[in-house]
Length: 173
Ligand SMILES: Cc1cc2nc3c(=O)[nH]c(=O)nc-3n(C[C@H](O)[C@H](O)[C@H](O)COP(=O)(O)O)c2cc1C
Image 1 (cartoon, protein in one colour):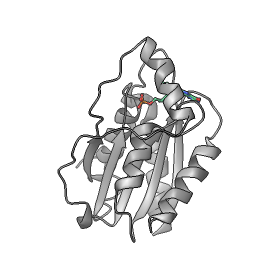
Image 2 (cartoon, rainbow, N blue to C red; image 1 turned 135 degrees about the horizontal axis):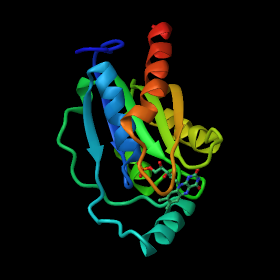
Image 3 (tube, protein in one colour; image 1 turned 60 degrees about the vertical axis):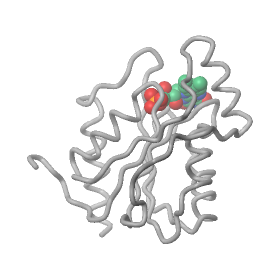
Image 4 (cartoon, rainbow, N blue to C red; image 1 turned 90 degrees about the vertical axis):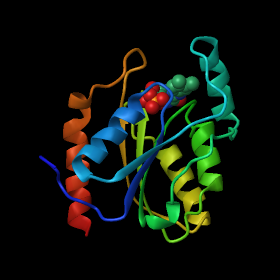
């Protein structure tokens, strides 16, 4: 594949995205790494407008949502790139449910997080790292990208940051 930074063997990009930003970042990672990709989906659709406040509240109280069945062999992968986002300063219900349910034993986890606030989402990173550790996984590194509330990020606007992150991970190995 043209422009690929590295092929990380046994890597899976798994992500949740309501507004589409984390999806763009997930696809950019795949473009530069050639890994498999799967989207975490909720059984109940979220409604724009009023759904925003309800969603923020769900995240604020640490709720877990019902997820659609995911048809893939998780066991096959050693490296999991987990794509999450910040709602109300916390992780989202879909990600909470996924982390609770997934077998993360012996997985190397690379977190990528999108958020509107330009600060690094330390609280969410620490909280997810701890939950993943309790499930037997290890967060090797994390990375975050700042998005805007009124428009979805373009692949071009995140490409440089994603490439730099993957290059950095490549040096770890
Ligand atoms: C319900 C809701 C609450 C949010 N709360 C925060 C927040 O507390 N801090 C923040 O930095 N961004 C917040 N955001 C912005 C999202 O983190 C940002 O738009 C992210 O890129 C969304 O990911 P997605 O487009 O993949 O769904 C919030 C977005 C939504 C929809």
